[in-house]
Length: 217
Image 1 (cartoon, helix red, strand yellow):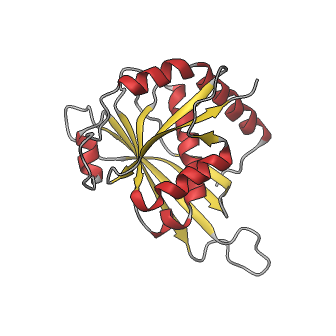
Image 2 (spheres, rainbow, N blue to C red):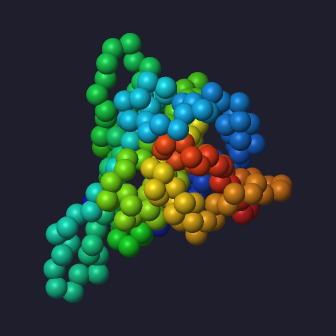
Image 3 (tube, one colour):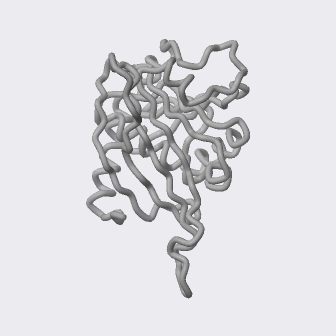
């Protein structure tokens, strides 16, 4: 694991502000997009079905590591690993998911990350989806999942790309909205200034809402 550093934090904060500077354009694009989730659909979408409707997919999978960092006096147990795989859905030939990045969390707080590969994205690939897999790891670690979604949104902006939708299991949607609130994302758009928008849709599509974050100067 690579532990976060002061330099990493500065770069991360700079990237967040860069996202916010493009907020008006991003929100406009979100509203105009033909999102991969059909408006009338209330059926559960599998990972393959989402890929058929998307230009690219980032799959987020949270797993609890039962014995990792478990020793007397440990301040990092338990650890949750969140793996992110990337799939390019525009390739002429079938491609396998790429292991993009791993994150490690303790009680919802980031303790490490490691990137394994770069992604091939450009600003024209607008129908992207961040797909959160259902499971015990996700249900028990929604704060960590929310943090990863924000980090991925910032990283995508480096490629001048953005996710049209973040698709999450229905059973954790409401809790994720609460977790985003603790980060500073709320349902009402802020008036004036730079902001970041995330579209959070439940799977099946029962809930569909935008969350907004205002970036301070």
